[in-house]
Amino acid sequence: MHNGTRLAAVDLGSNSFRLEIGSYEFGHIQRVEYLKETVRLGTGLDEERNLTREAMERGWACLARFGERLAGFPRAQVRAVATQTLREASNREDFLARGSQVLGYPIDVVSGLEEARLIYQGVARLLPQSDERRLVVDIGGRSTELILGQQLSSHAVASFRVGSVAWSQRYFANGEFSAQAFLAAEVAAKAVLDEALGTFRPGAWEVAYGSSGTVGAVGDMLAAAGGTEGSITRADLNWLCDRMLRAQNAYRLRMDGLKDERRAVIGGGVSVLRAVFDLLEIDRMRVAQGALRQGALYDLLSREQPGTDLRAGTVDGLMQRFGVDLEHAQRVARTACMLFDQAAPAGSERASCKLDWAARLHEIGCRISHSDSHRHGAYILDNTDAAGFAIPELHRLGVLVQGQRGKVRKLEADLQDPVFVLQLLSLRLAVALCHARRDPDTGGLSLRCEKQRFHLGTRPGWAAAYPQSAHLLREELQAWQKTPWELLLDLP
Image 1 (cartoon, helix red, strand yellow):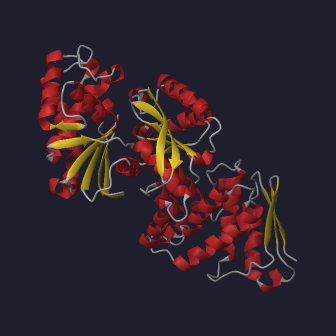
Image 2 (cartoon, one colour):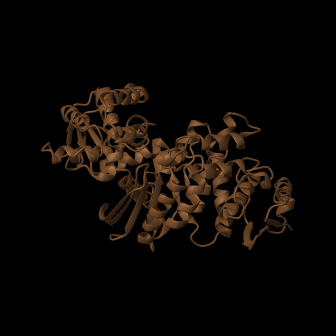
Image 3 (cartoon, helix red, strand yellow):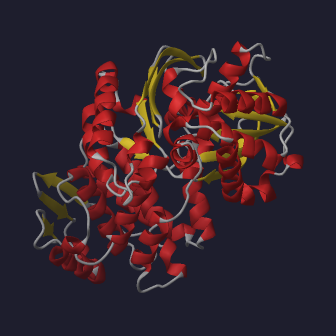
């Protein structure tokens, strides 16, 4: 990463979409440009948790504008992250397909815990270095994240389905404020957040920070009213709530610092913030400058620097947790990547890295069942919270793990994607070649691809020297029948 390199992060929140563009300068990222649009995607979920067409159109229009600004950015220098609304939406794939197209970059839907990790990174990177034990609170549109951390490391993360958009819709319809509504909203928020007490109790942290929309909006309103800049106290929240009750409606509330686009969700946001203060016994919260989008930028930076990609450590952790045979996993990974690199087009290093992870994880389902380990492995990857990974990334690894054996045509996967197909074939061939759980003889082994046809060749005498391996490779021919792809063997 050279000084002056531009990086960009897109945050698809439930209330607002944000674009942050920064420039890498001597290990830090300096803001170049910041764009924000109030999209209110979270208000577009119907009773079946489908996004309405109108909500999707608002989101796509915003992403198209962001995409125009990002034109020319290399793919590796842009990260788009979607949060709770798209975690919930039943028709999220419809939104993501068009959204990724108009933005020009893939959109990662991250788990709540991964969102919390990125939020902490964004907050911590913009704070002075300190050994203080921190609590970070982020009240979004449909979820609230809590994080404990110190310096740049988060030690505990949690995500709860309570937020400013959801609570405003439920308890403050049409922006109406009443004491009964605030009481009901706060009691309901505490009921959701109550399990946080065990981990995020007052003695577990020294300084509380709030990031993102709700806390920022409350901080702006209090500062404009003469309060301490960048600080929120219990007394401040009580005073603000009293002002809201006297106004009786969000649209009659006259306060400097309250932006019009925030009015519709300020009731829900304040009620959740008051609940957090009461539940965790917070006396004072500092308004943090960093947020999810900055965390995504620094995550991009870490992925580009050798040895700092968190995902590699997460893979090692999963291997250890599920008792994977490390030596064999590394053997299969080496073989798979060797075959992939022979046939892959230039610029496929990222795909090779992800194949390496899939190969290392190909036996994580064995602890549940050896005979169906590939299916159990895919289930684990589809249902685990893995730091550094987006949900679609984990799903793709899971599909590769599931596809390591069996008929390819029965696999629910995109067989029109040549890079994915090459990853899948390379993993399947590696599993077959390493069947004896020892290093295979790969001397003279070559794989190449021409259009939709793969050619696997060996040196003369290889098949006679390794008859079982040759038999397994011939069986692989059958697995690719009735697919758009053909495998040809040359086993002299």
